[in-house]
Length: 467
Image (cartoon, rainbow, N blue to C red; front, side):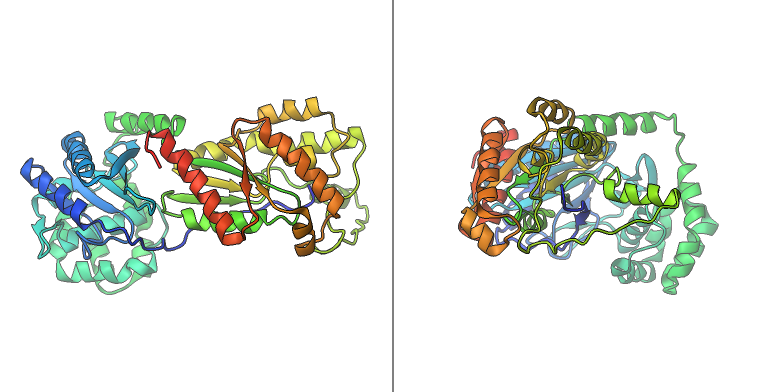
């Protein structure tokens, strides 16, 4: 393939939804009270029960997790929502609520059976529940100082410093409610470290906070043994979740050069961030684990002291910039074999990402070798063999557009070559149960919506949820 590979993770503010949540959330909270279950919102309670930016973090007692989920499912059913359990790990369960109707609303409700990083406690969850209060909207919330302690330790056990957009909230919590900040960290950090941490937060000294990170992590890790029952429970539940991830996607877009795959892939990935996928990973071609051959050749030539001659390339999107000649059989097989290794090794990052609830979208994939000029002499049986070793996508979507329209927009290939590639791609799609044609003739926005709807349909069908 002629285009270089790259990847990036989509992380943008999710777009607000017009579907209301107030009736459902009120019913759920009321039912928790009726059942006598202790609960409290950890963060982001200001807009509840009518509004939340994305999810609802609910602190409960660990022994009440099953009952809380049952109450949630009962309330959701009465309101016409569907529930999918998408995470079930140590002391943490996330249920994704999906609204009825064509305009889907995705509302994750996280049930925390304590406050942990991995299997290490970062705050005293039982104290947080016992000290919780009901605010003016009828929502149970943890004390502000305790909430600040949880937010702070949650970040510092994962990252070297505390993110700027949460500093004011934590500083306010430590100034207004230093007592619950201290009490929430008893048993996690020693008294001296708690006081130093509190002082740095109150004085807005985030460099000082960062300097305490190594000591904080050491003390947090001393609260649990790595061979404890909690540690074993954490690792087994984590492995189980990665082996059978209930929420993830591996989607491939196909089409001749200039057909708009990259643009569509970018926009679809952006639209999926937290609606409903936690992570959106966009790949241009492969996983970029092995270096491109041309870069590898340059490195070898440099090591041997040979002069590297740069071939003049035609700018992408201009006439003739696409590949127009086939390699020999052996050379083509060599190229395909080398890059197939990247796809095969890509099983490892894909395994990790899918276990984290990611949708991975590729603007091109291994199937490009079947139709791109350059690999026409490679035996089809050899391509099929290598393809069988690569990760199988959940969906292969061919973006079907008029060849003349593609040529007028980006004349990278001549019309005859575009039409030849389209014919081969249609055969690829027809021969694979997970391959489908998407009519991309109605413009970018309409195509993005069609791709998005097809991926969502796949996700919902896995959990028995109709359109």
